[in-house]
Length: 155
Image (cartoon, rainbow, N blue to C red; front, side):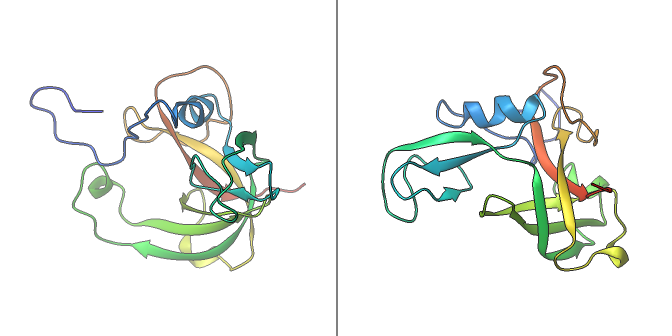
C-alpha cells in the first residue's frame, strides 16, 4: 500500500498478495489465521504455500484460537520510521500460539514492567488505516488490520 501524494511513507501497512489475502481479510474481520499441513499435521506461521517441516504442499488455512503465551519481548524506545516514531516506547514480542507456532507481534494494554515469560495472552487487532485503534475483536472491515496481543483476562 503506497501513501497518497505528499504523505509520509508507512512501514506498518501490510502488502497483501493473492496468496496472503485470506490472512489479511480474516485479520480485518478480527480473526487470526494460521496454516496447517495435512501431511504431517503441524501448524505454522507466517503463511507459506508449503509446510516448513515436511515440505508438503497440502497446506490449508485454519482459524487460530487467539490464545498465546509470551516467549520473549523487548521494549523499543526509538524507531524513526512512521508511524512507529509516534508509538514509542512499545513492546515488540515473540509469542507461542496455542496451536504451536511462534509469532512476532506487539504487546498492548500492558506495562512492560508487568510482562512475564509464559504469561497468557489473547489476540486483538490494530487497524492499519490510521495507525492504531487497538481492541477490535470482530466486526466489519475497515481496512487492513494487524494482529497484536494483550494479557488474557480471567477465563
